[in-house]
Image (cartoon, rainbow, N blue to C red):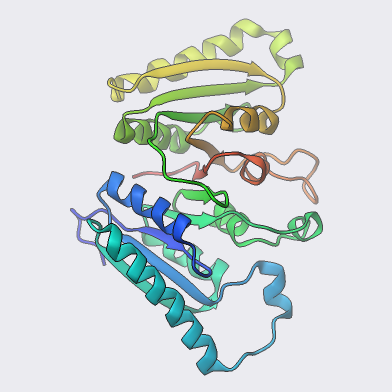
Amino acid sequence: MNLPDQVPPIVVGIQHEQPALLRYAHSWAERWNAPLRVVHSNSFLDVASELYSTADDGASVRDRAQDVIDDARNYLAELGSVPLEFSINDGPATAVLEMESKHASAVIVGSDDVTTLRRLVGAGVARHVALHSFAPVFVVPHGARVKEIRDVVLEIDENNIADGPIRFAFDTAARSGARLRVMHVVPRTAYLADPVEHGVRLTQLVETWHPRYPHVAVSPSMVCGDADDEAVIASTSAQVMIVGRPNEPHHGQLFGLHVAEEIVRRAQCPVVVVPAEYQP
């Protein structure tokens, strides 16, 4: 249990040896002056696989899990300077990480590698955690490297303007000494119908939040187009992108993909999915 003056840990979920993900998580724990909690599930499987998995020998599963944690412990010990915690759990990875998120500053996971069909039926640990976590979730593409954070992008659109993601974006830029690009994506037809109104909304948003973070350099921009497409383009030059949750699906409730989900799947940089009601 965290004392009132302690920063809750950053939780990183690992499936196997993932040194790049561990290094990335370690860098954020340093940035936030937070402990790093490494979590591994004995059944670190995606949602679809869990439905069809068969029982394995308990001892061998525990041995493999302990090997994963021991490797992580040894790797992180060389990086130093961050308090470390480790946990092995028996439950499904999705449920374990969702529970861990209740007491975390953030959750960090690697991106999913699943087929389109499995994605449509809800497969993927990163997808599930990003859409259900109580804390912000970093989804880190495979092979992402630790970089100096110079450019943070906050994507907002007509269906997604909430205090939680905005607060997290300003706070992240302030902690990193980075520029914050506030990118308001407006459908072309809506923009053409009333361009002045959309510009006023963006100006008001910046004027409301910037005084709380006066040292953050803010660069607002309005972009006409599709929210996920424009966010993916912006991700090619950003070190981290922040999007809100929930978002409206594109193509109906049954098979429609959330904007945040599409951005996570296609972005070229780590993406943080932040609950609308987020409070640090």
